[in-house]
Length: 315
Length: 307
Image 1 (cartoon, rainbow over the protein chains, first blue to last red):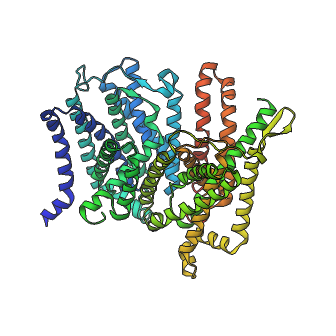
Image 2 (tube, each protein chain N blue to C red):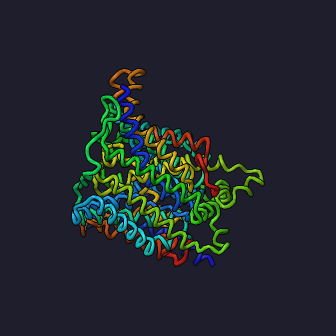
Image 3 (cartoon, chains in turn brown, yellow):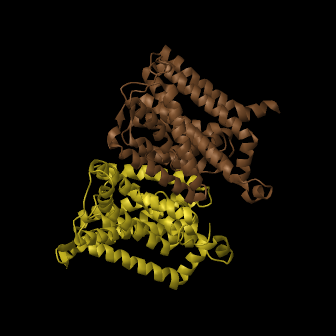
């Protein structure tokens, strides 16, 4: 039945993106600037979570160093701004390039390992990036680097207006989502899925999954790097803390919380994680006392994360 | 670097290594035998330290605090096992990560609520106070030597337990193939509980022993947890011998690296650059080591059988 098919596969992401698109309207009507800034921050992290969800869900690659790309993208923008280069057409491709190279090199080494060993080796590379950032004393070292402004877009100030910046972030998220969905549905995506299920069979029919995995790893790194470049612009500040393993762990938690079977699960996870954190910390300073058990309950009673609970079955 | 400094740093490295071993031993057993990723192992170390401080405040004696905190560590570990972990053994690794992350958040906050956010400390017991002359110009605190000795003692005990006893044999068999062990009529759930309880007590013991020399504060287990994971991955998951050697290796590399790299960097680079690069490389060393080991041995140095 096409209608139930639509409900199962399309309804949730469509509702999700429509709701996100209505946030600027809400902010305009109720003159609520905070909601807008908060939503921008959520969507930036959602882009990073989405990219992690892509390699995690499709290829079972649990990268525990994914925050490194947030940091690399952010530092690319921050360091160029420090040298008075504000043009996004220069700094964003620079961020992409840096992340692609880092992902290609570390991915080629990490993908020799599997399972927990992969988790830990990606952590190792993440930590190396982190400590490298702390040693950049010319760019603030441990304390980070303040950018005195935001990127420009062919000389215009699209980045500086909160509303237009929100649409830019929203557009990036939507584009990344549609792109990854397309990739997942292609032959490339099917090879990745096949490699996750049974690598030996795939090799038996003459496909070496390594190159596919590495390409997916680089794609994810680049998208997370874009999120980092946006993050630097939002905070107008870049620091090694962007790359800490806590942030990498948070991204994994977001993906698993949302539900790993679908790409939009990561977006839902990021929204749920950050909104819950914000709401609970408004009630009590000890919000983790509630948040922690809540995560445990989700695992114990909602198999397949929030999406699993919505759909009433594990994806 | 002088010979004295080198000796001191080697001892400090051993001390960190022993502490890491106590945490990593439980982690690698639980992981190897139960295929369970317990991120909450680090907060169990923290809990051990807090329980020791609390027990000391009521009893006033280090030794009774040690005993009491060990028993309480085991008790809290089993409570967690009963209410949370037991339901996760046959789940996906990522479900385990999410749930045990929830436990971390809860316990880190809970100790903050109960004992406050300010660092606490536990006095060194009188019996192990003072320091002894090890070499000319080298005095080293007795307590730290006792810590190293007790860690080595636990290592020997574990070695005997794992290689010479029936339960150790079951643990080794469980790490290689738990399904066969269960099929042979062993109560695998009970074995799991024993292994888990033992691992928890070791982490608690590490926390208690660390309490007099490190500050007892919320989150103190988080970084050690990451280091313990580095250790078990380098050693090979499920291998006690691997965990022991890797723990000492990591302890020594990290401690000696911190005092050596800046000196080495100064030989190669201008002083200002060396002062930036040195500490960063020192912090990175163990991760470089891990990446290198995994590059050549993708399942660690002593893989226990199950990949």
